[in-house]
Amino acid sequence: MGFPAQRLRRLRTNESIRGLVRENHLSAGNFVLPLFAVPGSKVRREIAALPGNYQLSIDCLVEEAVEARALGIPAILLFGVPQARDELGSGSYAEDGIVQEAVRAVKHAVPGILVITDVCACEYMTNGHCGIMKDGYLDNDLSLDLMSKIALSHAEAGSDMVAPAAMLDGQIQAIRKTLDAHGFHNLPIMAYSAKFASSLYDPFFKEGTQSVVSFGDKRTHQMDFFNSDEAMREIALDIEEGADIVMVKPALFYLDIVYRAKQEFQMPLAVYDVSGEYAMIDAAARMGRLDRDAIMLEALSCMKRAGADFIITYFAKRAAELLRSHEQLASSHVEDKAPEPRLATVR
Ligand SMILES: [Zn+2]
Image 1: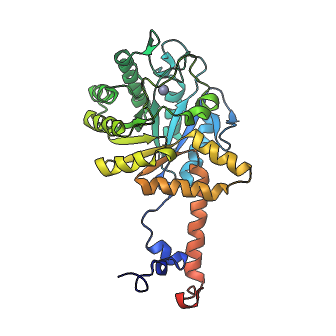
Image 2: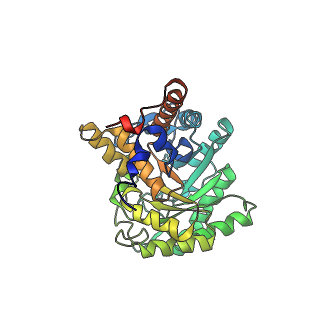
Image 3: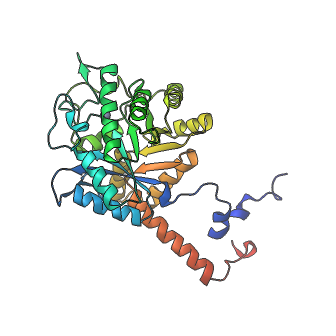
């Protein structure tokens, strides 16, 4: 039975009816805000490629977490930019390291917010690599010990969830074992399971953490962006090793992977809407080519539709503000206004 009995436009007549039959929803509760902790106090340095995002000393980072919480954002993801780097990435697991201190401060001042910590060594290594390099190659098994040490130091500082990001083989198992052995069996792991070797990370490393690799690249551990079956194998292994949440990164060019991951595994699924995605939208908006707010909400909504349960995004605060004002607008319409005209009168 087709036209004229079937008229799909009937359910698109006005916002109330569109909202009623909407299949997916976006809310501040779906967002995780990435934050960059730097040494010092009263430091609030805007990241040029990510306007509206800052390198923050811990006092300012706490304020940012308070604001995020007030906007309904449930979680932050912490990255550290240390005072000094070395060949062993020792700042990554130091008890008084930048991330460890930031975790303590946020947990103390904003107890309601979930603090997730990124587990990797690249921000702490002189060479910018994710783990221990041997003859120009990232040594997998040596680096596992390092990852376990980093995760444990985050747990001890009070992190609510650790997020191993290095794409090493066996890292989820190694970290799970270490956490369990130290009594952190209830601490969840969010695995960067299908993290692709993408140029979309450039703004993060060039300006966010200033930890660009000094030689080589990350294609021996991060995934080849031509591949999709391999992403499913990565996710399957992480689940087997004990991941509680799996992730696809980046998001926008990779929604086929997001969709497939949700269909195949039915696991809690995160996507990381990365710095390059933010920078592209921001640049296009500055040039007057795209409507910043509209394209931002469309992009985030499409990540949800593809299958993401939540989104790590530099847009979190702006999107939460907009969604809040949309909701207020919608509820005032329901209360104050007569129903919109019926279909028969709409042309
Ligand atoms: Zn790394």
